[in-house]
Length: 226
Image (cartoon, rainbow, N blue to C red):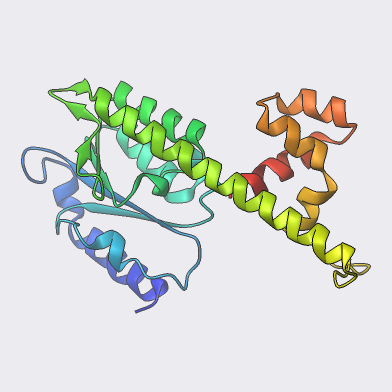
């Protein structure tokens, strides 16, 4: 089943269960499940494996590099939290919330402030215990998110090295006029920007140091965080 067909079915389920969402669903809690896939061709079955029939579903088809608050369904879910319609959220894995540590921790901080419990299926952990932040949960999430970032940066570095070797062997062809640069080409072109981003320098400072536009710095950062 394609994501589009699944989304239609899920929309119908959410519509039929809408009256339930106005009050406690089960276990005296108003529960939701957040799902994210990058493309419409990806199957959501794995992320739905532990779902409950009464969970309200929020499904985004978007890059994981997009901040949670800027995703259509993510934004809608945050609005429902503010409206008091949700107090318990489930996700299959923590990387569904974001691909960089800062964005994930910012979302977790918001949920903790609102006393929203976040359960991560593949870890079997909850963010709050007895209505208090679970320190073990935050520690494990921080470590996992950090490792994911390091792996992503390592992959990008290997890609850049591959491009350099291909150029040295004369088998790499540059971008033809009017064509779009690949992510690897952009990163190779703005090596200094990448270097300062990894050091945690502010975007505006990087733009000044590298003599490029703020938009270029933002573009490079988006590629790194994908």
